Length: 309
Ligand SMILES: Nc1ncnc2c1ncn2[C@@H]1O[C@H](COP(=O)(O)OP(=O)(O)OP(=O)(O)O)[C@@H](O)[C@H]1O
Image (cartoon, rainbow, N blue to C red; front, side, top):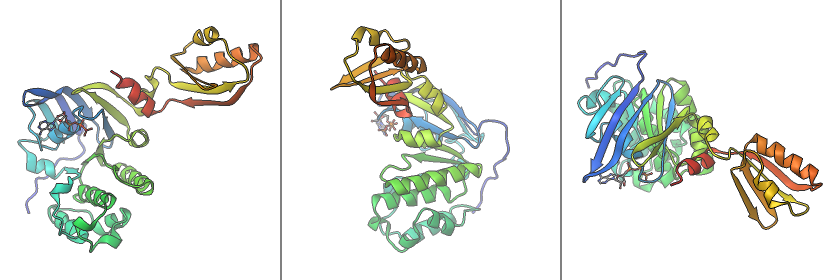
């Protein structure tokens, strides 16, 4: 098999997407998306269902042809230099891409044969807990086992970039955590990861930066903590007061963005300043706060806040 040799160690971003547009039947689903990804990053793409995430990554993979815009993967055009891009970029397959009769071992051997310098699939299968399933046919695997096989096949060609679309959907909590560790190891070995996910805990733990896509455009691009910091109420304080609190004093607390009352419990969203002020208010009013809890907003809160229509 002939392969195109790819120049390594470039100071250019490994992925560059500039003003990407894609429509289906005249409806724009990607509408001017631009971003770049540095080598060795885990770059997350988040957004509501139908926001245009998969269309964007499929354009990067060269599986869809953009209507306009420019994409480069390690300096290559994914459409006109597709073969060369497949030597640099590994992606998670869709279920329909594998024959039901193929065993796990056959799939791993077959996909290894596609690459000039594949990884040794045995440790990879071990790492993904697939060793006991090597003789099982694809059609006989559970959803989570199929998902783990797809991850192995995405990594088998020792790619410089791996695109993982809904990486851990369908995995049990143990398999999910193991997969996260594997992805961190993959990143530590220098591979760039593009991660499309709806699991905020996954994005918060793994991603160096996140692009939030809304209606075909990037609505925010930041680190996970940067996105959380943009959330209106980045600190949440909840308590049950020992006596009723004056509504007016509560609603005039500095930095307050939201107040919720549920039964006797009060939940305030705001900033550190709000926390200090409510504590002073409680002391002044000689009211005790039972079950006082203070927590930072999460990426989940940020996502809900930033995608609110
Ligand atoms: N081949 C296609 N033909 C027509 N419309 C399509 C096609 N592929 C996707 N779409 C539409 O384009 C829009 C964006 O789809 P896309 O799959 O990119 O969204 P997504 O952000 O990945 O969504 P999800 O989170 O649900 O996977 C959706 O409204 C979808 O129905």
